[in-house]
Image (cartoon, rainbow, N blue to C red; front, side, top):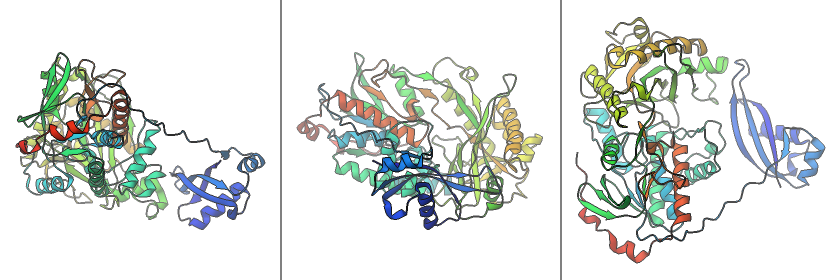
Length: 558
């Protein structure tokens, strides 16, 4: 039996003793009657700029009868906690599984699917086109310094997926009991414990690199096999069934079950799947740019006189503008807001510029950035096949590369010049150092965006300036182009998680169109793995040991 207390409100500079006093007041009992307690949630209420407060939700057990205490208090803020749902034990299915499950992709969906399978003795094989996080980090830093891109080891591809080089947000719109499982696995792998109760938890790219490394070690200890530099170049399909996967155009690995968790940027893999007859659907997209402001400006807009309070950290925001009348005024919104972060070069293909945002856990860069994007419908694509959206995005990424002057420099423009419709000839008077590397080129971003997107973003900037003071400041900076808000396609699947037309192929995560961030992708990977466990028997270990001659697979070259 446990009691749940809601709406414990405290000043932002409160101490642990203040929290204890507040609990005593809610319970009308001395704290010595509390056996133990747990913070379930801590959120920030900044609606009143002259009174910013923390709001807690607590669960605790007492040395006295909890039910009698709740009845005596008789207040909606103090209730008996609902019993937690027991963790269901997954029983292996009865279908034979000759070979270990293969997972394509080591992003959140692939990693968490692998963890669940490995925990139940299925010893999955993970094939990742990119490199392990240590080498991947070196490749990315080299790209940012020199403009020399490795198309298989970059911000999009490699161990941990695209989220490894992001703010590491753990917010999600889904509601699923597996979310707690994901959070606890992250903490066990080295994430800060406060992610378990913060209202807007984040990990930061620095912590994510360590966590991904620790998850790899855990998988290997549980018998999983992880192969990097291993691009799946073909699925062998016979009579509508998966029978093998080809790696690096060299070796075919027998397969009965393949989880495809490739992330939203594996365009060449989408093309391969389409050519082989896997059912794929086009879906709506978004295009825009990254917008940077001084972090202090955002803090002041959100926290008022408390803007410099160290307890609050760097403020974030979420902004949305609905579509206006006419087809050219699209819905626009902020996306992947990175407080105290940097804008990063996130290209994964030669001769194309892509931007993204990234923050360390401390969020201490003093510059805020966010994507500012407008929606693109499938009717905007010229082409009827499901890869038309991929071609559409490539077109504008190539324009951005050309406008930036090559070397993966990004085109950039002051917000004031963007609103006036004139090119930025210089980037003077910007109150911060632009964060994008390998560098930026002052220009006119209208030249690299669809006209209706430019018009929609102009209106959004003005509207957002009314909602968030200073957002439309003329010396804020726009850096283009942002195109990777979501996957450009969806790989439809049936209720049993299999592809609609290929038996044994299990699309999962963001790359298949079933997630929109680290947590939802991880949850989707777990869901797919649970179904596999409940469907198939564990493969025979003696088969696993004799199957694969990994020494025959050489590193994928560009």
